[in-house]
Image (tube, rainbow, N blue to C red):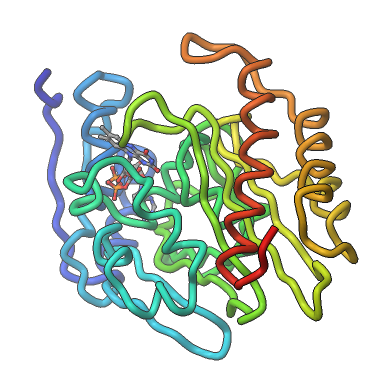
Length: 290
Ligand SMILES: Cc1cc2nc3c(=O)[nH]c(=O)nc-3n(C[C@H](O)[C@H](O)[C@H](O)COP(=O)(O)OP(=O)(O)OC[C@H]3O[C@@H](n4cnc5c(N)ncnc54)[C@H](O)[C@@H]3O)c2cc1C
């Protein structure tokens, strides 16, 4: 289906983009890679009269590494992040998630921040933001504000971003050398959105788990962390038995819904299987056999 008519705006700077957004309000939508917005429009699920294309804003095209972690700008495409040595080295959970995002053609156009702003509950990047405790940076004509990932995702395709705000950066905190990362998921076909997925971090020091993050996608309207299962791991040596206990807690805690793709029971079961698999994979990445 063809897109409905709209007025196209191509600002030359972030300042120009936020000024335009302030003038047009909720009549305007930001276009980044278009991999979610354009299908939404083609299907008439949204028909914004104005599109503000930020794709050419080179001032937002950087991946930077600092003492506070790795910062990714709004026009960095999935594929640029996937092939970045800095992300591979300093943000391994982001690196582990990227190959799961659609197909390479989609990753070549789609942006990391577009994925976060779109907030699809089956998308990988929101779950990674939650697992790592990422910080979102938003800009409007009123200034800049930072939002913790735990406060950012409100519900299905909904975030706390205001109509006049552009997400300019996401900052992933510095990753400890003692932590392993894994993203595991089940989807019907390679490249499909996952039925259920897990972004998993496990930190092991002197043979004991010091912290863990289990952030699920595809089980609710937002990504979900199962803190009780995470806490069950802390202070224990990594291994099959403790991973199985965490998996049981996950299965008992999550309350996914039924839909045409999978039943709630199937999703719960898969979440447990992925917990064991994800933890073992993350532990193996730091040389800890499980
Ligand atoms: C066939 C197919 C399969 C896919 N499979 C997956 C998958 O398995 N996993 C996955 O995670 N994704 C998947 N996607 C989605 C893909 O990752 C998109 O690239 C991503 O969701 C949106 O990024 P984008 O840059 O294309 O954003 P756009 O489509 O340009 O924008 C998406 C939404 O976010 C808003 N937005 C974008 N950038 C900003 C910003 N900086 N500030 C404020 N608002 C902004 C837009 O206004 C729009 O509402 C798939 C897409 C397709 C077409």
